[in-house]
Image 1 (cartoon, rainbow, N blue to C red):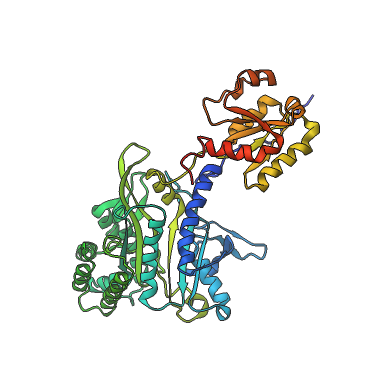
Image 2 (tube, rainbow, N blue to C red):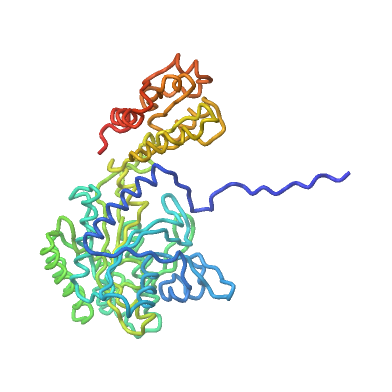
Length: 503
């Protein structure tokens, strides 16, 4: 007799580097997104949504590795054998959208957008392969006024989230200045390996806060091996060239004008470098007009951003307060948002340069920072009011109660499972219900309902097995007239511990 063939059962597991999220944190993140979106909208930006993936060739030089479209991004082939890639950020899809709809759009086109992005990179603690960004961009804006506005707006977002002045700073630099420094160091654009070397230099400087000067110098030279043994090839600069680049990163000062003077010395006679310094000087004047002083925005040469498409001013929002990490160590959160000017990205489609600048916040990291500051509300005890089903034959009556509560603006649901009293109470606890509504045979005979507050005291629902035990152990429950259901629920919610201090 042959053995019965076992059926395949897949192992329930989230893919590596991805995670599941539930109501409490998602609601708190949405409040954070709403606060940032409110600032964007107040500045006059229009909401936009774009697809989760694009044709890989539409991402162009934006891709981490053009020859292997699945390196750095998640890619697959369509049925017509064209490569599609999950969006790496929200900027490249915007460039495609603007190019596709160029004639019908107002110029500048000012849009904001939020949504998930995907990166095919090595995951780690707090580093996920899918995360949410919220962006704002001005496409068709050639002047430094657009960049200054982005910087001031990012600072205003921090204020809107309740992050105090002094706990954040927007750090600003200009890619043209680095181009000037590289020119002074002998790296010229006409060299065949210039773009490759430049990108490695950018990404090395971008890691200065994490690796320190010694680690960056290794990446500017022959390369660096990390703690896991992975080797990263360096830019291959000489010791003299490395020193010029490192001197550039040390040119910052507390005063923006003093930083500009230091940078002017760093670029020497380089025309592109001097142009970058002059743009920073213009941004300084505009930020003063926007009441964004050095307590909110500073010029920092170490900010270069790692992506290759930035062409001018670049900026990062850094949180400078210290908080305890998962290891119990005091540490800074660092950068939670960034942006810059990318005048060449739309050119990929149009063949002509279209000036653009934008900013972006990483939601997960910013949310973690707000949690450390106690600026989030994730209390699980703010779920829906649950109407219990004591008599399955009277489901329509319970639906009427639930609708009355919803019509009054109260979050409510009727229990839809098949369990008895004990199961329903456990369900209400797991849902974080502030209270339950009960109408059994006795209540119905008196034209009453019972309201039980689930927030007060210790929850013993696991020990409740029948209606008699419920009543003998009643705690924080009242009986009210059926016609006074809405008013009674509203009063109990207002008095509940789950709602004290809110609003």
